[in-house]
Image 1 (cartoon, rainbow, N blue to C red):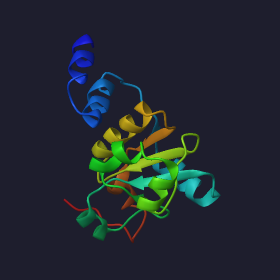
Image 2 (cartoon, helix red, strand yellow):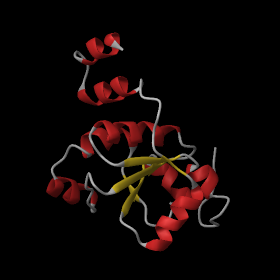
Image 3 (cartoon, helix red, strand yellow):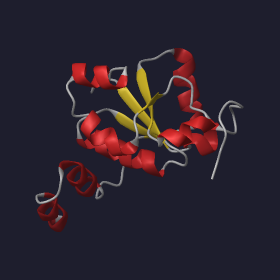
Amino acid sequence: MELVAETALIIPNILRVQLSFRVRRSMNIIETQELKQLIESKEAYVLIDIRYEPELSYGMIPTAHHIPLPEIGEALQLSSSAFTKKYGFSVDKKVKLIFYCRTGSRSQQATQIALQLGYNASNYKGSIKEWSKHDPHVQMYS
């Protein structure tokens, strides 16, 4: 753990967030049924698809917004007005952020970054792989 902290001092901010947070094992995970309930209930949350632009052609989960994984760290550090201007929606540290990708690995990284920055974040571990089994508008791909 000390080595990570020392290393983090000499690398860029986004990497510092990722490396220093790898030691954390527990993370908020959301399951498919819980996500479906959130979408249906209109409860306050922000669903963020962190896949790359070409992957979006396979469909997105309803209510999702898009920010590619490489932009997450910087995006979540923008002022509220700059974030809204750039991405067209807003985020708040008190409102639950839910990240997803194709299989859950990249969204786990995004969740770790958001948690490190003080956000109430969760990883939809099932991601597109699981959601595509329940939604004909979303396709799994390799």
